[in-house]
Length: 195
Image (cartoon, rainbow, N blue to C red; front, side, top):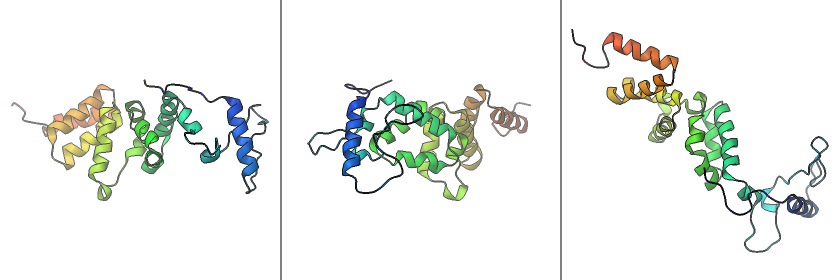
């Protein structure tokens, strides 16, 4: 797994000083005090506006988000993709920035994507939805393999590829895929049966 080089974790004093500076410059009132100790954890709260986190006005400044290691961001995205209740919950994160787009399409994140994150109605089906589902299936997501296999087998009439994807899901002990393959075998719709 690739991690960012250099300072992987921000220095706490820098974040606190930057937050205090940003809080002093801010004219809007907020419900919480930035840079003050958090009463539950005893740690300093981090500013919520990333553009003012380290705003010294100097060229070449970096954002604290950029200093987070990739494996930590991937872990957070895995949790998000596994708990998404609709496709927009996960897809909107991919539109946020280039880094989140790249890490959001990591195979580890896509392999844990919940079935609700790629549920798309037939009238909204598109090539991009097909590509996203294919990425999830290639990452080893059993539910994506089953869903794409059923779509290819029954809707796109690509029986060989559809049955292959359902078999890939069935190897992972995916119950609906096992049942669908049994029905296909029983009906003989998967290929020619010798009698």
